[in-house]
Image 1 (spheres, one colour):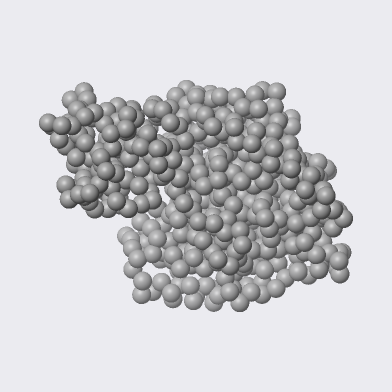
Image 2 (cartoon, rainbow, N blue to C red):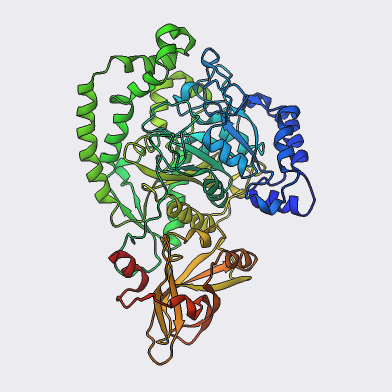
Length: 599
């Protein structure tokens, strides 16, 4: 299987090695090979795909960020003229319009391949709760795929799409990513429009993204996000211009991790070993691990299914469950039906407790960059899951169910394989609208722990922990919005750049706050007579990615050479003199971070 990453496909198109029509024909052919995985509820035919191909015929590849990129859509998200079933044929309807997010991706040049299997009404984390058949793991047919976004994850893992859309109310965009060696982005609530989504819990639902790496997830996010006035829960993605740490930063990341007593692997020695190995590698790479108390997060998680929010699932399908309850799978009916009996007093009591827990949890995020947990504690076989479907599904959500009630963003990333050749991964979590900061951290982890794409290499030997080479890299000094953890840092990390040191310029520079933003940017001017030392970070950028990085730099900024305190000259952001006319000079001790914190 050839690489289906966005970069690989784009390069293949630009070099005329293939065409979107050829890629789609290959996907249709290879889908036959994986029929026993039960991935598709509706795979688009050649005739159905033709209009999407025709839309690209007169559009240059460079004109659309996702030109010719195939993607899959979970079948509780609308794709025009294709039935939306939500895993229940009695519920099915045929929408005339695409879901808002789907339309934006198509407008960006992406091509929908089909609608994917799911746990019925997005109720489950395992992938076995579908009348269209149990969705099987991409690496081993005996194991669960994870759910509810089961088919969406397996489609990407098996190379039948470059990325896919899932949903995530309790972990459905992360657990399947873990079990199928993928990146799973659960955006902040409201960041992606829910117009055209069959709700599970409307106040909590998030459309999620599965991708082969964090750079692809970030590229898809850029096309999919956006405020939607038609969605009452939609919100703008306003970059935070306030540094989370108010002192000097050393570039050393700090992850919040669970103490031993709060870790649960439910008897899976392979996952326990993989988690400890991951932590060891991260710690040896210079990342600080700080224990947090997981109990308040876990209490929030229990509120999701043991509290009144199950009533939202009842509301979403109230007409069906009251008129035709037998249309639901028995396990789904068992979970959702009691939601119609809960009272307003139950909701308010739970809300009061949730608000108290939010403060406790938020306080633990203050001095860490993100929380890191296993994405799931155990990968069950299908037989094991079906033995105790509710209990073991609940165990799958131990590390995920709290996220949306606390209004947090998260990204699941693969880190290793077990001795049995099964994928394992961890999840990074942060406050709302920290999506790109988390993707930036995820990219740094991928630089430390690279993994193979696809399913050709499933043995432990396929996982390499070799450090990245210092050859063919360019050192770049940054002093503003590209600093570690700030709004534009992802432009470095998505290109595989890594932070090598924090230092200062020589005493020959002045810094100004330029007009415009957010994100706000500084201008660096050389002044050997009245200059001062300016705090900078040195990022090592792959030479092959340097050109595309520079191409994103707007006037009056550019790249030139800057002198460091030790006498070295490195590539750096500089500013044309006209850019500082009327700009405020930054004199705060602590440089750009301290200035941003003062706004």
